[in-house]
Length: 443
Image (cartoon, rainbow, N blue to C red):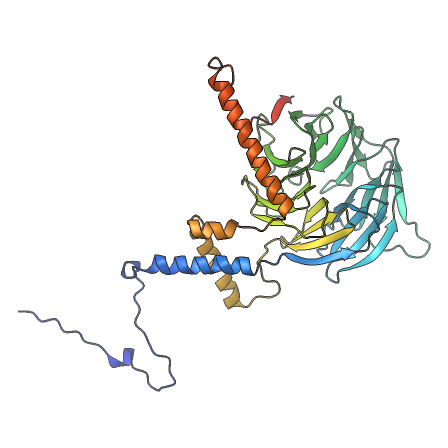
C-alpha cells in the first residue's frame, strides 16, 4: 500500500518578520478559477458606470468673434495653432495651449467661405464672398512687409483645399479650379453641367484625387492628371461637405441634408457602404480622426456626434445649452480633441474621449485604464452594460424629434409593406436602406 504525504517547506509561506508581506499560494490555471467570469463582469460593470460618471467632454470656449464662426482650419505642423473665419470677414489665429487669440485679420468683405493652411505651415489661404483668394503669413509680418498676396477671379468661391505635398490648391464655386501658387489664373478647371459647388477636398493618401459636392445633389470625383471629371453619384438630397478617410484612400464620407451621413467606396458608387443615422436636422460639416477609425459631425440640430467609420449610429453626442447651430468641426491632429464653431460666435474645445483623464498618467494608471477598456470591450454586449454605455442625456427637443423621426420611418415602412402586399409580385421592389438614397451613378 502506497501512502502519499503532503510535504511543505515552511520557508515558502512563513514570513521571516512581521513586516514582510504574507505569501499566498496562487495557481494561474483558469480551470481552477470558476468565478473568474463573474468577477470580470462585475469589474466591467463598475468600469462602465465610472466612465459615465467621469464623462466631462467640454473643456473650453474661445470667444472673440463678432459674428458666427463659418470655417475652421488646423495647422499642418503645430498642434496648438488653430485658425477661424467668421461671417463678417474676420480671421483669427488662436493659441490653444493658452486659449487666447494671438492675431486678428480683416481678411474679406462678407463671409469667409474657406480656409486652409499650406502643407509647410508657413502661410494660409482664405476665400470669401468678395471674389478673392488671399494668402497670409502665419506670423505677423515685419515692418514694411506686405500683409497678403492676392489671386483674383471673377466668381464667388464657396470652398478651398490645399494639396498635401505640392504648392497647388483647389477652389470651388461655379466650377472646380486647380491653382498653382505662382500663377494668378487656374491651371485647370472642371465643370459637368452643374450650377455651383459647395465643397472640395483633396485625398490625403492619393494626393491627385479630389471630391466635390454640387448643387444638383451630386458628389463628383476628379483626377488632376485627367482633363475631365471621373464620375459622380447623384443622391436624393444635396450633400453639404465631403471628407476623405486619411488612412484608407478609397473611402470618403459625405454629410447630407436628409439628416444622414454616407460612407462610400469610390470604386463602387452604386450604394454607400454605411448609412450613419442619428441627427435630427441637416448635417453641415464633418472631419475624420487622424487614425481613420472615427469621424465627427456637426449639425443644424445644435449637437456634435462621433461615429465609428463603419457604425450606423453614433457612439457619442455633445451639446450645451448655449450652443446654437454647429457650422464647422475639426478633429485635432493628436487624436485627443475636437473643435467646433457655431453661429453664436463661439469656438468650443471638447475631448474626443469624454471620460479620458488629461495630463500625464502614471504607469499604474495607464495599466488600469487599459485593463478597464478591455473589460468593457469584452462584455459590451451584455444587456446591463450595453444599456449604461449607450445611454445619453439629450435636450428635450432633440429627444422628441428623434422619437418623431422613428414614428415617421416606421409609418413609411408599413405603407411600403401594404403597397407591396396588394400589388402584382415584382412591381414594388424591396430596397435596402443603402439603395434608397442613390438616384444614379454617371461616368
